[in-house]
Image (cartoon, rainbow, N blue to C red; front, side, top):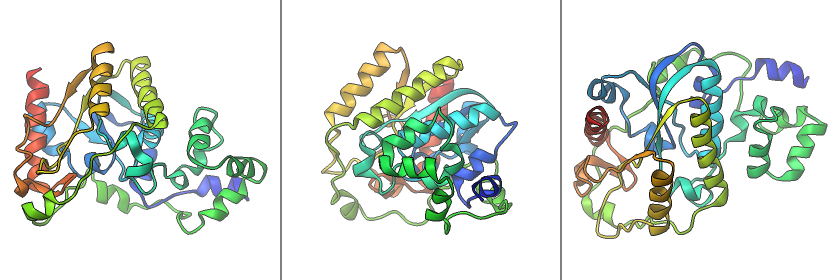
Length: 282
């Protein structure tokens, strides 16, 4: 029964869209959580950068999930450069996101020894043992989240670029500035898989650029100094280019933002255009 389900396992998600992709030739990919999925417009970035890219980001995902998605993508597709988002949220994913590793999207990857430690880091040990002893149990637990047939609508929803801009009006500046989103401390699991992403890119000769997508810089915004110091140390020691958003968008202009941590379509296009220009110039 488990063998049958694994052969017919599909979900209606961005993760499945990435896992199904084969034969894609991309000059670059962007990777991260919804702060990349909803905030980087590939069409605009392509035009400004002069290259062809793809958005591999998935909402609410930490570096563990990012690592698995990137690893699976480059097994079946070609990639020259990775733009990896870094911020204080993805380095504290358990506190920042409701579900930083969506294991139910990757049930077929569980037996793979390359990913087994990832599952062990984010789900209870007893569950891993149960899935080993009774493989069918993992499909029972998440039986309402998968289907038996391919969803052809995924290609239509994500087109060929993989992003999704947030439409609608921006919130007022007053509402935006009321929220404090500075996190404290960096989670060791997130640092572990961040380093694994960098190591994977190095082994596959994929150029890596670290970015930080825009945050609304209202009165209460304070950047976590531990995050800033860590990223600067990694960028300097590994000689990796790091591009923050500070000079790419007016982060105090509330008309660019949907909420404190996400730009609206206007802000996303503005940021993507300016990011592409600086990438091309450098």
